[in-house]
Image (cartoon, rainbow over all chains, first blue to last red; front, top):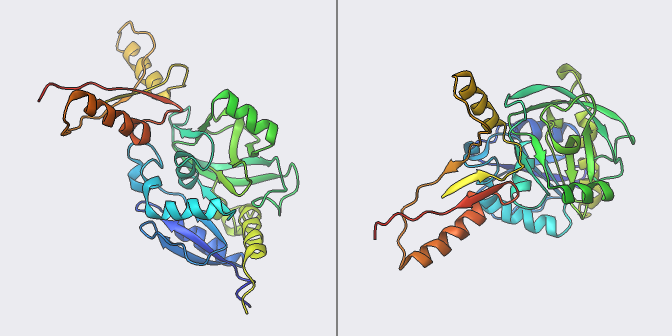
Length: 233
Length: 77
């Protein structure tokens, strides 16, 4: 296959990331060339998309994602996003993007105070984004969550703005596992090239794992990356 | 620095602590749980120390969306 058909996607690895390998395996299986980038790097190299994986970066000290946002790689991710590059944050990656101000709101402790680890149903509210283009509008996806701090919160004016602009891309469909405002499971930035979600699509890409719905999200990202990758040769 | 959940922000940790205190028999109302950061700092004067601490709170120690902060200086100078 030519380099273009296997777009290069950076998976940023922080101290405490633990879903980076799953993300890499899933992206590779979906036709990408995933490369791990240590958080101390300030250059992502020639990549067509970026994934911030799940885990517990810096031990979740202070607030989830609060310390990771000062990593050199985040400066590079900010530059990449400012240039329109697609960036997907999963779970801890979502928390980091919120703390970094690349996405609105913040993730707070679950309303139940319990760590939640199970499959959840989410509804695709917008199937036209760079991260959901393989989905059908309104499609229900089964994807696992596993988090203690996934309760998305935004002030009322921010929620209203997101609702109006249709930037709440994924919503919990059969009960909200964490108490997030407006049943938010995933949100998009204003430009539409940065998305964060609490469910883990990288854990739902093989029938052996109970669901392959996560492949629709990551596959969408791979498609987006492929269409952006510069034509080499 | 005292960092607290802002009023109106759901604080499940505070709720759990409040309900445990009530189970112990204490007659308490709402409980809210924040965080204390003790810091040693060299500064010319209290005003400079406060200015610097305020920046630290705004840039890292508190998330202004959900948390307020308060600064207290110890008289070590």
